[in-house]
Image (cartoon, rainbow, N blue to C red; front, side):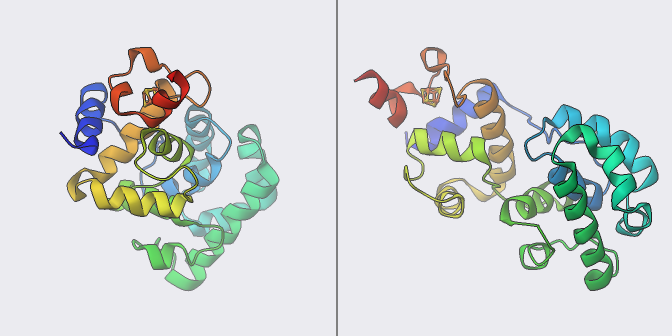
Length: 210
Ligand code: SF4
């Protein structure tokens, strides 16, 4: 069996129906939640957005709310100066360039101020039903350990390597599974290797046990 098939089989066993951990009811809400999730837990983001989205869940309403009031809502997410500025700037971009509608493709999404490839992939997959692999810190670390990408790859190179081997109809599911696997099993510090069914094919495991 190919390495990727073993990985997919195990991830499907561990996480048969993974979902996006951020709460949202429209593409704009997801975009804002992803900005807030940097260096913050999804649980905290969901607490914050449950109050914020009652008053501002469109670019227009967010601009009307303004950066100072926005800071009060998102204070507990950390980095509230940077995050509030980013949210207002991208809201202005959506209003001015796209008539208030969040675009559904990589080129337009990454034209928004502060929106990078990872965020765009999350939005395309979860708000628009696309099949993408957003490479966050967990996806990158686990991919490197398993040898699905090079040790010194960039997130973009990692994404391209994964796109070559993960079947198209499984990409979004794989992205969620890798995040959960990285959080709960293949942690940055003290990964649970002894319980892991991938240790026979894992480069990292071979390195640390030889
Ligand atoms: S063997 Fe360890 S390092 Fe390798 S994938 Fe499993 S948990 Fe991660």
